Image 1 (tube, helix red, strand yellow):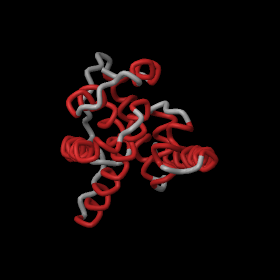
Image 2 (cartoon, rainbow, N blue to C red):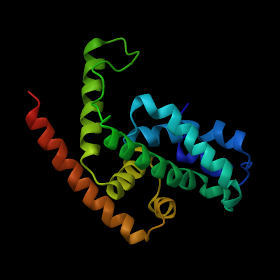
Image 3 (cartoon, rainbow, N blue to C red):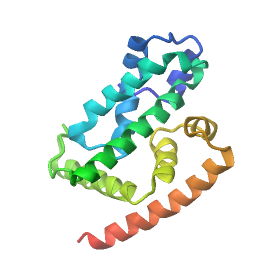
Length: 182
């Protein structure tokens, strides 16, 4: 039930600004963002709920419906950061489980995909928060640089700089992680 940026752009100007409609239209996007920003699987549903509680409180702050995804990401980014910090304080940071649910019929393909996801998550964990946010929004969620600048409240050139550095850091992390894996 993923919607691409192209699917959501034409409807954004007419999108209703009520909580239920925002939830139904963007919950998957928020879930994916939280997941890639390091929220543990066990906490994902709670984190999504926290994001939409903040949305409910701040719904009046959203003045440009076309910026709803960047606004939601900014909220999700803060919620994810808080969840990761809480997990680190409590010592709850744990690796992904060995078995990820995936209905692929070919076991070798499923194994390969799980290994790729583990590698992706491990490489993302090496990025600092600002670079990770830009990388996830660009490479995974396919947002544009201006949308990312709006979501993070930073200058457009900062987005480009962080993306360049994040890509380099990510590539180094992947290479390092692949060397460790037999």
